[in-house]
Length: 363
Image 1 (cartoon, rainbow, N blue to C red):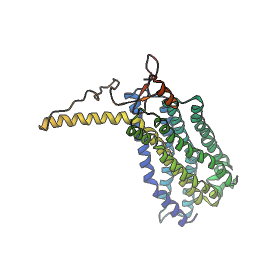
Image 2: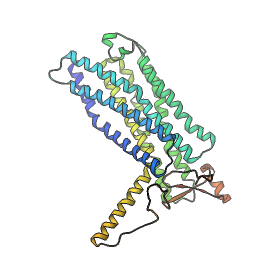
Image 3: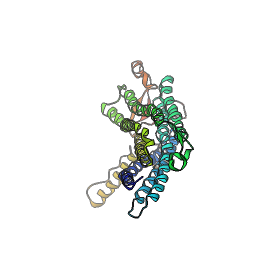
Image 4: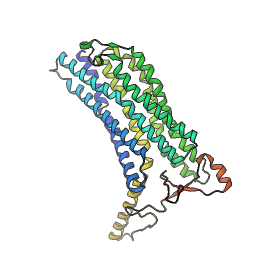
């Protein structure tokens, strides 16, 4: 690789360096708020939260590896760098980029499994619908996540020849194999993002007892996954770049870097979209706290008495009361029939959380 190619690779790496961590910070913040909310406020943390946290950890590891790879190339471009040193640096950066590319698909499939489990627990769909929600994400994790990782390392013999072909002279599969294998999984990933975003809205809009404003708010919160779906669609259009792997180490590094970055960004949006609706109790508590402080300030400076609203005041360790409830029938797919029969409805807080009472039944 000549100095000009190295400069192009380094510039491409630097251009995406900062935004990558901005999106990672967004995903990390929303996940922390979700864990705090479900651990200490609503006290109903479940397996979907554990899987989401694990997916975030894998995503963080991938982001760190991408950053190291990018940083390596950025600092390698110096007037004193020899072609030999630049080649060695490219080999190391490409090795890291391929490792990141192997684990990256799991960063989008693990959060999808978490979302599928959450929707199944929240909306209580028919068994067949529940199966259709969960199975595709699990299949995607096995085929698009684990399978893609295996193919990434097995496509060349010896494996090290992928990042150092000049030294090992590997025998590799045709690059089109990787392209053909990844495109269907990328399409499925984007489709699931869209389905998981639209499906809850279709359920809640059937609930005639809900005000339109509440339906709209819920639909927006639960539909944030459309953003990750859009990112996934764009990333799918870039999958063909894998076919350029055999055009040199510099090209392979650039292609790998581009796809890794977009996969990581997609994972960040999936995590954020899944965590924002479940972090509402934290924001509500913060609003109550700020309102209480503001009321005391008003009283102290003589602007008026502090306003105390016992309906929204919460104490640590207590379940909240009257924080705004919506009614959810036993089965949302049966909402019209239940409404006609006048059967008893069970409640679900408008932060989209249900809890099973000790006496039995959802409340």
